[in-house]
Length: 115
Image (cartoon, rainbow, N blue to C red):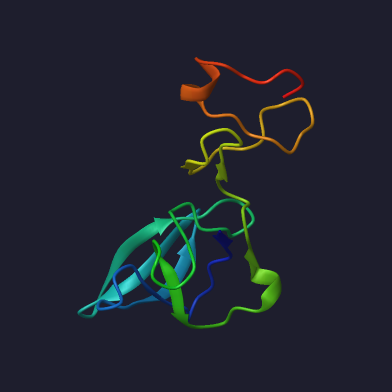
């Protein structure tokens, strides 16, 4: 999943520690750590998180904040291999149909005709 990062969102990666985004500047998101600003992660030019995001309990996710349904776009970062089913973060379709992804490992073996 890709999530637009906004000031005021509360993120967690383990369900225990929570990080409130305090500032976004020049492609970087920051949070408040004991009264001092600390780097949290990078965002792209459109504001999407450039770290592994997922639904609750998988990777980093927003537990409280300023998300709307438009802010959460599934499968914009990463895709599962059509042959083995392994999920590959940051991958995109690589077959002529523009929808299918075959991972490197499977491409080294047998790829069905037409894929």
